[in-house]
Image (cartoon, rainbow, N blue to C red):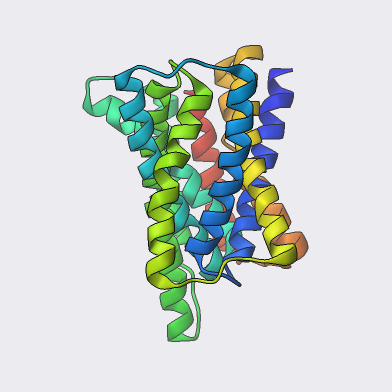
Length: 278
């Protein structure tokens, strides 16, 4: 059952990312984020009312707040990258954030296995290949490079979130999620007021509410996966969420990538999997 839960989580994450990314091409990333975070907050409050977890310790609370701030910066960069770039390239690059906890561990004295080192090297090569998108139009080339830079920023933010959330979740998973959103929403709301961005309406609003709930459900499914299966297996399946985004981008947007970019996607996903296994 662990693999089933993890597969469902990765599919939900990837689908939510696709929905958020595609709507970011119509609305500003800030407006999309605000809608997604608000819908997730409502669902998180409902879950908290049911499970009634006690409020976490001060240390866990601070880690959850820090994780929430890092996560919202990552999502803002990620949605903007999805809006201006090729989703099939942006999504795998963002997933390389799983390498950051490993790098922090090395800096603090951990000794990674050869598998993890191989994963880091392959992931780096994948990012380099992805950044070498060729366009005849100079402006298109600049936009493509910017999407890669934003995806890397998102990866760093996601990696930082993983580090903080890992500590906070020891006290309570639902409070970690809830506190993160309580930090993110005022920040996004302030940016929304300053920029005067238009909020989604009608069918677009429904799609983004589904994306927000999907993101929250995915996090819960991943937690269930860890309780039903080996972490080494579950983490691999859960970290492959970009596959769902790539498949949806190809099916709905008919995205096509050159062979070099296809190789970069494969390398990035392979590297992420090796890091997770290691």
